[in-house]
Image 1: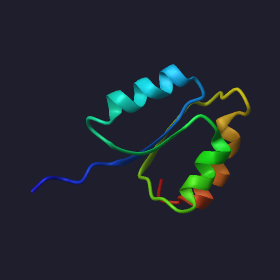
Image 2: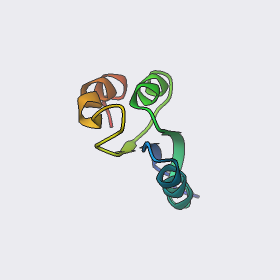
Image 3: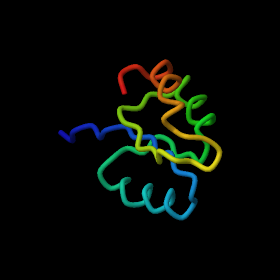
Length: 78
């Protein structure tokens, strides 16, 4: 019986890094979402489950640390 993979959301504003992370991590994780915008990631988590968020802490539009509260509201188990 195969063990369920950890559900992962990736948040990174540099496309090349985002794509690289997703490609590399998809081997060991179930990447359920990848985003370059924290607002979109928060909206996604309103209707999708994730176990872990891998996030760039310094996005171009905002500081990801400012979104921790919103992310926790949408996905308190993360």
